[in-house]
Length: 418
Image (cartoon, rainbow, N blue to C red; front, side, top):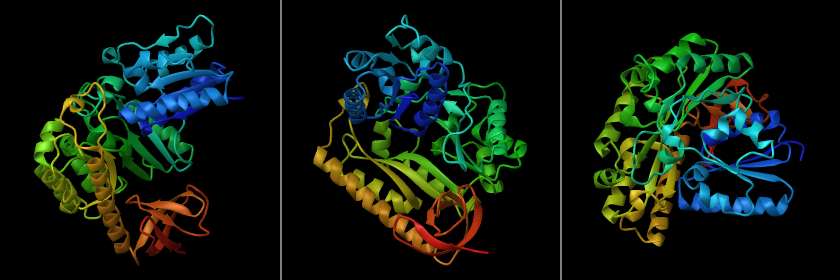
């Protein structure tokens, strides 16, 4: 192999950090390395990581296989016990250049995983872009201080810590100067941004500072947010900042108050509905997405019905549906489980409901004029994140106007204006 091979499993933040590792491994001349950046969100994710590692060893018998990511952080000995693995490194270690310099020597320790809960420094690594030519993802926060009963991620990512606003602005300015037209702010819990920084920093103040200091930035998006943490400045930015896109993805998880309580979430069903109503009043063109879990332990048919009808109650359009999977080491794994066939059936019902909601939204766009940023030949995204096919449109990165002519249930179709 000429260059290090990076296999990314899991979230956008992992993908961002894979680009950091790609640069560090290349600089350290780890040309024969395969780096597997794992996910720990479910037991199934860990199982898939193990399968991936074994497959890679069969296909690349001479390579050095380095395993990292949340699963490696939470269960280092599990991966150290695999004969296919050469090195296991933790989430803090994986973004440090010196880790990869060390791995290029014969004396490097096989397992390098420190206590992530002791990490306090902010993410200081910057890259020149991750995403398409037009869109880049910028990490502004890492870690989580909450303890939802289904989630192992705080133990893989450590405490919440924020990148100082000056560093964020500097990176975004560099990306925009390089031709990027849209930035997505990412992290594990980005609405917790600033709590560990001096002064009155918040996600809302960061958004304001970015848009003020980088006037050439045409589009700014937020990754998934916890609606209960939305600060007043963020609400004002939603109302007043035209360059902040009218699309919010919410960490809702359930529409039933008892399930939310057992999940140890910090919002109620009424809180979720109130947030969506308030934002819609501030920004009538906003579109909401949400994460929803089907079949959480103890969930009855009535409780599930409350989640199902939350889609209409909040006017949700884009759904990420997760059939509950017990994760060893979490309180939810010790709760009375819902039968697997029931979990799968409920997840399918949520997905069908979500597909209907998306189709209704897309149908409502017919005949409208939209701004589109092209991501690849003939395909782009509207301000509300709807994918649209525009045959014969310009080059990726172009911003153009189009008229919507129809949809196929998944994405819009239209024609370029002018």
